[in-house]
Length: 248
Image 1: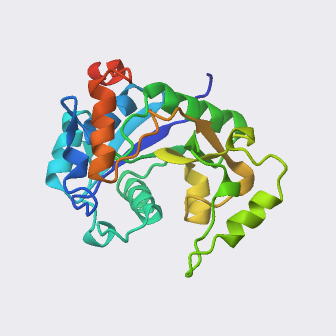
Image 2 (image 1 turned 90 degrees about the horizontal axis):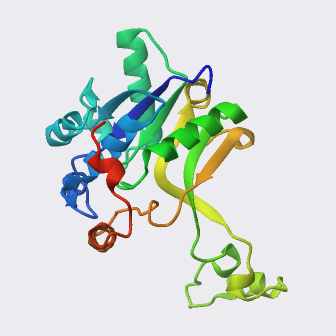
Image 3 (image 1 turned 180 degrees about the vertical axis):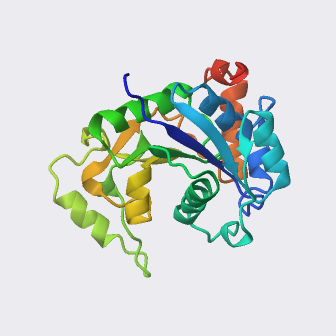
């Protein structure tokens, strides 16, 4: 790929996690969730630089151990469970522009809670970004259930809204539904100029794209049950861990 865009990879992780305490530093197969994301990022052909945004010295140290740079401490107001990813990304961009006087073509937001993105997933996202002149590329997976079977449960237990959707389709079997996708949390590639213009990740629907990832590489860890499942997948060889065993 000629004239490759310069991508700043941004690994983010708070020290606190209510759903699974210490989540980002927990290990699967001898490697922390932070380690999985950092090692894969460093092996991407398009990773110009990998930095970490965290309020935790332990997470910073772990990220550094796997090749990330620590440029700043994340401010306390951006380390609460209510802080938005938009503000975290903008803070990193502000720091780079203010302290280094430079910009990148795009920023790749990486969350350790979706640890199994591989280097080639990042590469595919960057190549799609460049080819489509996108403002956003995100990781996607197929949904377990088609949207016609999903809706709200009424206060009285009613599911009338869902039944109405089902009645409007002639293909009522689940296996007859066209595949649908949703974000998997594995990667968010955001154009630098687009983020500056809109100040939020999801903004321009006409320039937003997704890469499809299989279910195992799309595992998201938010609870002890999720962590147990991810550990089982690795321990039973259901996922190829060779990308994370290689040094960047």
